[in-house]
Amino acid sequence: MINEPYLFFAEVSLDISRGEFQAGIEKLEPFSDQFADSYLFHLLYAKALKGLRYNTLASEYFRKCCTIAPANQIAWQELVELQASGEGDTASARSPLFDPVTDELEKLTAALMNFEPVKTSENADPTSIFEQKQPFSDDTTIAVPTESLAHLFTAQGAYKKAIKIYTILIQLKPQNAEIYQQEIEALLDQL
Image (tube, rainbow, N blue to C red; front, top):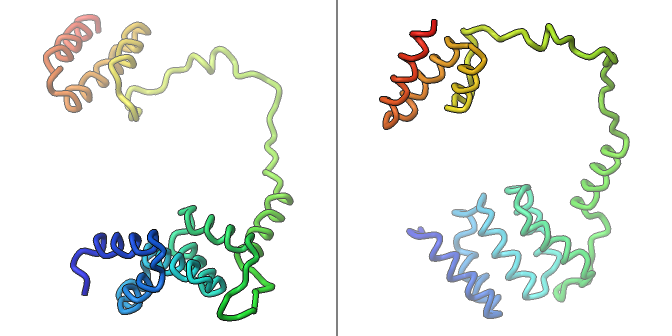
């Protein structure tokens, strides 16, 4: 059992960067069960295999990385570079004719090319000025209360909304509570 995995992985990474690929594999192999779902484990193992020119096996481990963390681009880039190099294994001359990653990317590309967004029906009539000037109710929740919004409501004469904003701001910024309380009192005088 490894107590500090980050130190272990750093040591293996150092071996790989020095070109000591076999040493890296020998350190990783005993812990393959412990790190079965680890992106970093599979990435380091794949890089070590790639260094030893076991490219087919390295590709499999890079694919596992891509499955574990599809948004992480490192394994994808390594896999693409490995496939683009076209180098076969030194251990075996077989090269995969079917590449599931490339196949999946081609399917996604084809699906995107055939994608048509849903057409909406819009009319050319603009929203009337009356509708634009309709205020929202005083009970509506304000997602982002700010001092600027409170000043805007005050300038528009929406004193209840401004008071609501200042009340929320007192809770969010207690260091300015005295200032906000003064604003509330001034607004209450105008109601």
